[in-house]
Image (cartoon, rainbow, N blue to C red):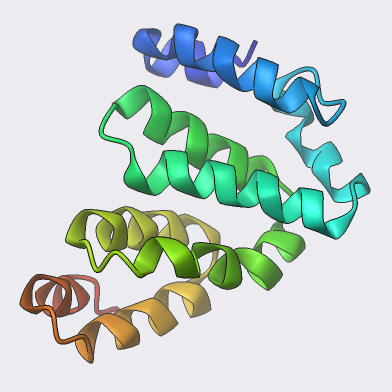
Length: 141
C-alpha cells in the first residue's frame, strides 16, 4: 500500500482498498504499479484515467481526492498529457466550479500548458464562478 497515501491522510485507507480492488481488474496490484497502465490497450488506459479524474475532481472526501491525484501523477506523464483533456471533457460539462477548481489544481502539478488552456477556457466561461476561478489561476509568464 502506498506510503504516501497512508502517511499523508490516514482516512484514505478504506479508499485505498477500494482502489486496489478496482485496479486488480486490469492486472495492477498496487497503487505504485499504476504506471503499468501504459501497457494496457488505450481504451482501458483512458478508462482508468477517467476514473481517477472523477476521484480527483468530483469527490468531496480528501481521501478520494488524494488518491485520484496520486494515481494520475504516477501514470505515464506523456500519456496523461496526451489524453487528459479528452477524458476530463465530460466532467466539465457539469459547469461546476468545484470540478474546474480541482482540475486546475491537478493540471498545475502535471503540465503548465494544460493549466494555461483550462485557465483560458475559464476566463471565457459564462458561469461567473468559473470565470472568476480562471482569474485566480492566471499565471504570470
